[in-house]
Length: 219
Image 1 (tube, rainbow, N blue to C red):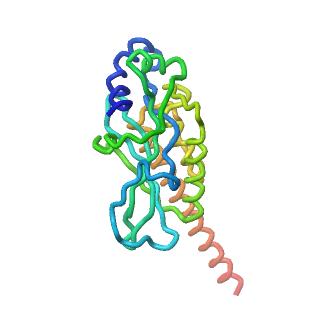
Image 2 (tube, rainbow, N blue to C red):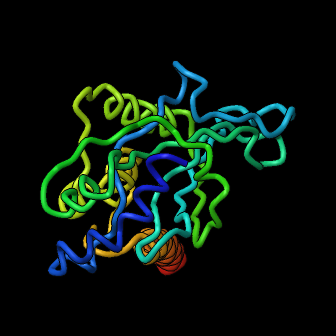
Image 3 (cartoon, rainbow, N blue to C red):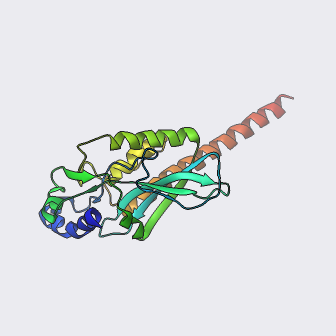
């Protein structure tokens, strides 16, 4: 499991070297290419996708004290379920000492998807249906991060919460504070956007009712 295994096992040493940032999520930014490569992509259904229907799922992998934020994305089938799973994440690479330094300084990272991450239990997730335009913006954001040939990771300034937030913003979502562990970041992302959606629906209903009342009152 290479980088992810080192990442999880190295967290204890990192805490010894950087106690002041023990509340920061040990995760990473950047992504896997959505279309140009099959890396990180897995077909899960032969059902055709609904026209223009795609999805993104923000996930927390259960590992260590912090968890690991990443995304799954792809086409939906005719039943509205994922027809494929593509993945995007970035994690630090190197030995334990280098991992520990990543709590203070930027360290080398990789955008190569580690399939062993899929074996980790999912602590929390939030799936959102995307239009073709939104999916294109998501794919473009992932492509931009993969184009960076000098990718680095830092537990405070450039971790997986920053990465997930970057993708979320690309499709018009609101993002919570990055300065929290992944176990709470993804639920916070979900709650923030679900509450905003419900408020918009409530406001729209009130406006519709007000317009109706005004029309009736004018008769």
